[in-house]
Image (cartoon, rainbow, N blue to C red; front, side, top):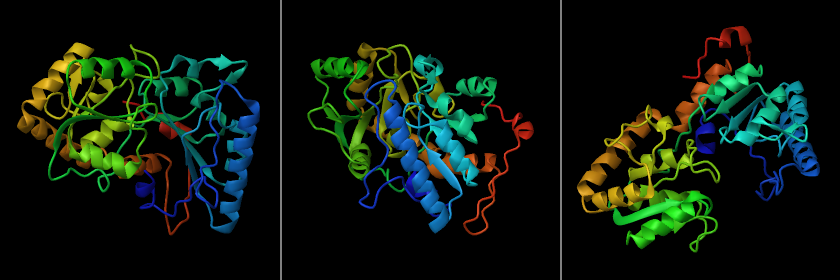
Amino acid sequence: MLTALAKFGRVASFCDERGSYLQEFPTRPLDPGLIARNSALLVDRVRELKHSQGLDILIGQMWGNTMSAGALRKIQALGVATVNIAMDDRLPWNWRPYRGNWIGARGLCPGLDLTLTSSHECCERYWCHGYPSVYWPFGSDPELFVPAAKREPVVCFIGGNYGVRRSLVRHLTRSGIPLAIYGPGWPNGPVGAVRMAELFGSSLIVLGVGTVGHRRDLCTLKLRDFDATMAGALYITSRNEDLYPLFAENAEIVFYDNFREAAEKIRYYLDRPEEAMAIGNAAAARARREHTWERRLDFAFDLLRVRIPGSDFVVRWRPAETQTLHPY
């Protein structure tokens, strides 16, 4: 996404001079000290950028247990628009106060100009609370996720080892399916973006798991949904209605409803690589037309009424007009 952002203007990351990310992540539901530290660092960084280089928009992926709405209001007071990308909004605890505090993305809304949520029905929740929001599926980078000239007959999965994923991988392994697995908690460990793009681009099949957290009955959009398809792999993932309007079933994407069906469909396409590659190529063409980060950001900036003469962003948010922006 940073690569796409750079096409709209100068980009500065929330990092120190050594490139280390400054935001701390919580190890318990609510840590007021951590929130205060993150908030102070972010406000200082924004002030520094505002005075040294100029700053127009702050875009983050922040939750109420990592940052404070008060810090975002201070940033707005500097003339900087604030936008939050809300992932996993379907998790129930993101919509319940914890010890009087909203710990999900909802908790930051008083300091935001716009919330971009990857769960379309959650737009209505934000609007019911009085906060502007729009459905914003993820995207991918067509310059990074490029199909390779040759594909290996393996099934690649990249993601953390938790929840239903562990059981699914165990089932597929016992079924004799060749797996290449990477990510935190797996023996191969995590990989960076460049290596991930190489793996997705060279694997015949990429396995998706669309469930949220440790839930087995709840799915949401994943970055992998767009990176794997952009790379031209056959993407076989959990049945997720969010993906229905984004990719055509069995023509651009393949769904499974349970472990047994996942194994059966993977075996079928491993035995028919030409069919697998045809679906992967169709998915890549769709992703390049419709699902790039550049398109997503252009849409978000248009909603903010952004004008860009040079590097000067002028943001005019008119709630009365945005009532016509339906999340579907």
